[in-house]
Amino acid sequence: MNVEQSILPLIPILVSLLAIPLIIFTGEKNPNLREFWSVLAGVIKFAVVVSMLPAVLAGKTLEFELFKLFPGIEVKFRADALGMLFALGASFLWIITTFYSIGYMRGHNEKNQTRYFACFAAALSTTMGVAFSANLFTMFLFYEGLTFVTYPLVAHHETDEAKQGARKYAIYLIGAAKIFLVAAIVITYMIAGTLEFQKGGIFTEAVRHAYSAVLGVVFLMYIYGFAKAAVMPLHGWLPAAMVAPTPVSALLHAVAVVKTGVFTVLRVIFFVYGTDFLKELSTTNIALFMAAFTITVASMIALTRDNIKARLAYSTVSQLSYIILGGLLLTYHGMLGGIIHISNHALAKITLFFCAGSLYVCAHKTEVSQLDGIAKKMPWTMAAFTIGALGMIGVPLVGGFITKWYLLMGALDRGSIGIVAVLLLSSLLNAGYFLPIVYRAYFKNFDESHTHGHEIRENPFMATTLTITAILSIISGIYPDLIINLAKEVLK
Image (tube, rainbow, N blue to C red; front, side, top):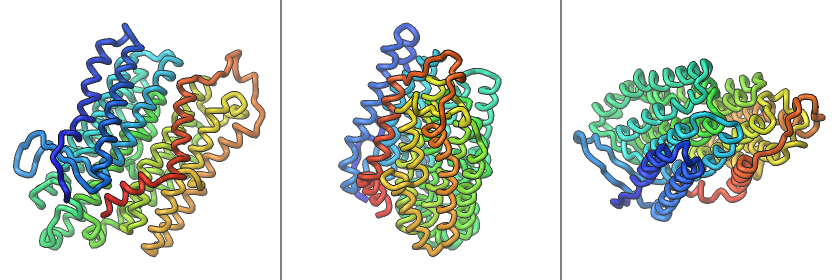
């Protein structure tokens, strides 16, 4: 490994942490300045991440050790290809989501906006910490930190429903980490003597042979310990978190929380176990089956939901398992498809949640059954929604098509007709719960009586940001080279 010592992987974590006191200090006295700090921190963070990109694409790994607790247990950061792919998307989309949040929070006259932007900044710091962790110990600290700093965002409205949803969110994620994840990390350290990520895995040949059965069980503990990945049956927190404001849902379901879940699973697959070892473990097939099961069942549940955000939530549960399934196929094309879906899903899904928020703020629409003819009143929102939906379905020229193409190739390389069938069925189900929304919006008549005298007009902040992410979804489908090159660097 071509390792270079550099403080750069630490800086994106610190940037938004330093913005938090500035956001709180300006607070309600000067909302424009408060939001300026959020935007500025986002721009600086993204610029620092981009500055590391040439070195990573050239095959270098940038490392920085903050301090060491015990031999093999350090707080240490590393910028490599997998971390860069995650960090690039998260840091860029934070900028977009901040602008969107300004339109949403002001347009809906939300309370506690200062707390909202402060927690948002903390969430992005912990997300960067996960992206640039050099070992399991550091990754665990930031993974858990993300749960705690996003709890106030889920409970933002402070209603009984919001508190109940936030409680479920915390119980699932913290409970799974305590029951499965801590034990898995401790056992890993006891067996391997290190928690440092290594290409090809950290277990020696002798350890693999001696502890094969134990490590097979521990692998499943990782899959469910990282409950942010929402593999069934530990998925219930995700629909419950829909009580949060829509920009938070976009953060949870496209950028930070759920992507942290699947990202950490990929870290374990590629840098703790290694693909060669996983091919020997029978529990790999169990995990693969659960991912395929989640893809199918979550899509079926999405078909039954009339609430827009609930439908999107179950769509997210399904789509996350594409990433895990790709990693677990253990074929080159399958793993490539799983890795690039981190970015492709983020762009399409954040677009869809932005559209849901726009429909809520500008038209007071929350249900699919209320969207008849809405495209005539909100053309930008529904055009972007259509692009995001096509990405989820996997239609050519949108990023999601690239993902599904590689996943299908990976399933065929593996000779798994069952996985091919799951992928094709899930695409049909995606079409089944997205296309009726598009049809209603464009081909049914708008009922003026449902406006209750309210003039429907798109919010400029929201319309601009959702248009940008929709365009980026198309660009990622037509020019996917950057994402694919980073993914290939992971698999070298």
